[in-house]
Amino acid sequence: MSIPRRTVLSVTAATTAATALPVPAVAAETGEQAPAPARAGAAQLAVLRSAADYAVQKLRAVAPGVSAFPVGTRFEKWVYSQNGDWVGGFWPGTLWMAHLHSGDTRFRDLAVDAARRLAPRQHDTTTHDLGFLFTPSWVTAWRLTGDPAWRTGALRAADTLIRRYNPRGRFLRAWGGLDDPHNAGRVIIDTMMNLDLLAFATGQTGDRAYLDIAVEHAKTTQRVFPRPDGSTPHVYDFNPDTGAPIGPQTVQGYSPTSCWSRGQAWGLYGFTTLYRRTGDPQFLTTARRLADYATGALGADHVPVWDYLAPQQPYDIKDASAGAVMACGLLDLAAATGRDAYRQTALRILTALAETCLTRRSARADAVVARCTRNRPAEDGVEISLPYADYYLLEGILRVLRPDALDRAIDLSLP
View 1 (cartoon, rainbow, N blue to C red):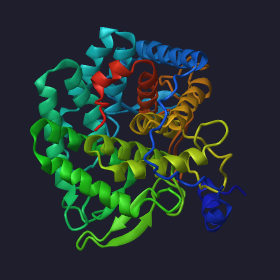
View 2: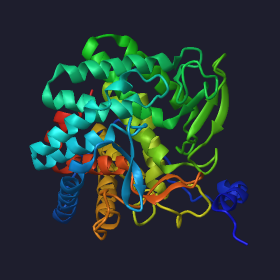
View 3: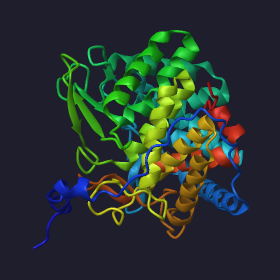
């Protein structure tokens, strides 16, 4: 008799906490001058440059035939969404990254065409993911082209996003329409990555309301998500009418008490970004707590498992997309703190992804990065390719190889 994987996962939930691997304690803030980050070695640079070149080669072959938004692969071929789902911003974002690396104007033209197709989503009140949709696509387009239409559209998306703010609980609701009671009190760690759209809106308009909402949401997340060891759940529920906290939950993680690796990466990257936009040292402290847990939970191969506390780890299914996001966040954190250890771990992750997770051996693959996992508990997208893995791999490599060029697309300034 075969036993479904979900059943195997469920029956061992009670033992997860007891069998978790130890994680190094969070380093204390000392206020000391940290040493300047060391440069990557020649061998690492060669590996990363080769990976970026491979991505450009793949995109040159695949991108001209793409007329919708990749959401994942099936049998190594992209499956598409016409409206972009929550991932639509990553396809034009990846094309922008390819343009920056190669200088090829065809990628710029394709990125513009793809981003334009997201225009109807500026007014989408059913999702918190407007940052994912419009920051790597429209904000980047505005920064690289100067066309004010991109800025205007991104500001409209920010106006839509702040409508999701619940002032009683001081959070942005994650899912569902504004008048839909289902999930009305649900907050997820992913939203930390959507807050930079609000910081952009304040920077462009001078209206503090956008950034104030981002800060209040981040403070709420900071209060309830990180555990004493620095790990986080995927979801935290509140009473939407009173704002009172209910407790942790999960959708894409193993359990409410586990640590979904991509969510941990969203958190550490998101808190670092908000520190850069506000200068609030508490956000930097939180980013370091999340980063220290994640780096301590990494296996020797430096490719994260899908959940750091699932009972089959460290021999479980991998999620290369979590590694790509984590590497970008760690490089950002290294720049913000001056701590070389974060940079070196990021370089090891990027090198591991480049050496063990690319689709080089497949003649039919549409994507650049393999070994990704979208939602393992639902058996949805296990060991596939995902568009955000391709995007963040290139972003991470450009942070190392071409930081000045990347700063033109993504505001990397420090407070």
